[in-house]
Image 1: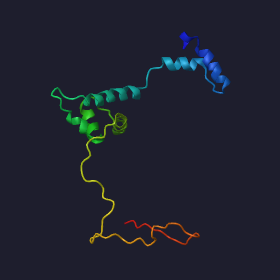
Image 2: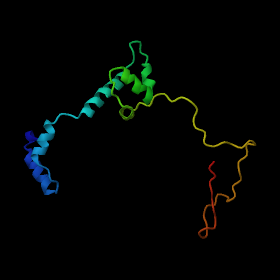
Image 3: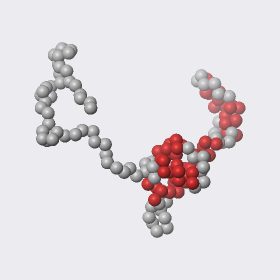
Image 4: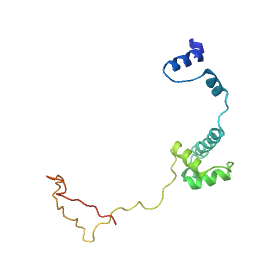
Length: 142
């Protein structure tokens, strides 16, 4: 910004005119401040997660890429990140788009009748009522 003719003080003056109280020294303090420890640790774990996406020399993907949050947390703890939190690993895996392999059956939400017939439509798909409390529609939850 200074190269374009704008100094920190002039930008802060414009912000003060808009009602935002910002001092130039707070900007300079922010620029000098070291990054937070969480940011550094997150970057290290993210680098380890991204390294798993690179295939082996034979071209096959690494088996750890299929791990979910629990297995990935244990794998990271064994491989140089003893303080890796399960919540941190979960958040960083979500940011990287890593889900892990989901096994098992899908949740079954409805069970068809034994005869294969559906219940009749008692309202003939007409869900309008001439007045309140004239037509009642319910849902049975087991």
